[in-house]
Image 1 (spheres, rainbow, N blue to C red):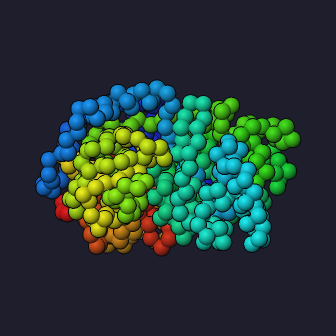
Image 2: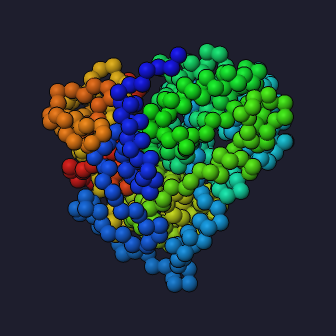
Image 3: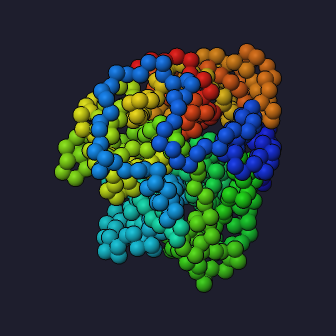
Length: 525
């Protein structure tokens, strides 16, 4: 039985219909999918490549004192714009996150997929099979391709983000395998924040799809989270259909239920692809199985597939100042080099070996000594790249979860008080002034509170319905002011940086709201 759509979902659907004819305006669509209707005005389309950008209007008024930019000899300086254009003309790069309810088979599916592509050797898989059999979990062998830690393997669940790479005829993908268990939602959010597209894995077996889709399941929450983080294109892998004897009725039932919800959540039908698969047996992962009776079965994901190669790479903000949110860091450089290594995805701009970057908060600078982009040695990186770089001259004590690397000439603002437009999810207790939450921003999660309810906004027009409301109920769209409890964090408005301008609010293990930063109200380091 399909659940009756909430008023929140209806309004999202209306906004999506309004924007069907405006494919060029990606920011409008992002805002509309979050019920933030006031952004329907036409905005200028960003340039694809430009080495300079003006300082955002809301930038931190006083930048930290930094030494002059490191000088790179002309012979070693790279024309990043030209190199990026050349690379883009060959194969577009996309970051893809794999999400879904716990035990839906995400790691097994993608592990078997990578094995089918030849990314994992027969010797390695046989080793995993023997080791898995020893602990009575022989079906976990393919999952161990991505679940690498001892605790993940013994517990049989993904706990942190695993990364891998593969290619299709026209695309290069960085694969991010996200945890499904609700205890590790913060890690899932951290991975999804780096993604351009997603694969949502659902378990087709009787009772299991319903457990993930209905109350307290992670299927709905994961879908809402990735959409709130800007993902617009998604493959839905209906997994374990071999257990259901490839029932066409079951496939159509799941497709109808989930498809309706996903469209209501802000996804376009034309950007959703449903594929029946079996991660354990490998059917329909790389090539079509002749033994599969389901008429809708098509090759999944790879060269002859119409799915992955149809994903459109998003516009990369190369004309913005350099920004990279740090997801991991450790002492020691790449290879045998010395220094501090930092990993993350470049959110905006570009950087090259020899340039100076500043870590915010803190304001300490370092020089890029070596770099790897998508696990390959490189001398430059640009917006959208998954990057590992070694920095010299930077104390590791200056790095923490949530640190943002940026260009010294235009640093990211640091704030503990800001205004945001949010859409309230399906909550049990209304949000009131002083409502405590955990703020999620990139890989960071910090205690905060909603200190002021500024106004309730009409979902379709963006007009103010009521100023200074007493509470916000489920489905509401509103402007609120949020204050962090412990420390300021690097943050930008959504207008200046789409990735660094998104926030999520969680409480009691559930996501209560998501939105975008509209104004920074205080500055501090």
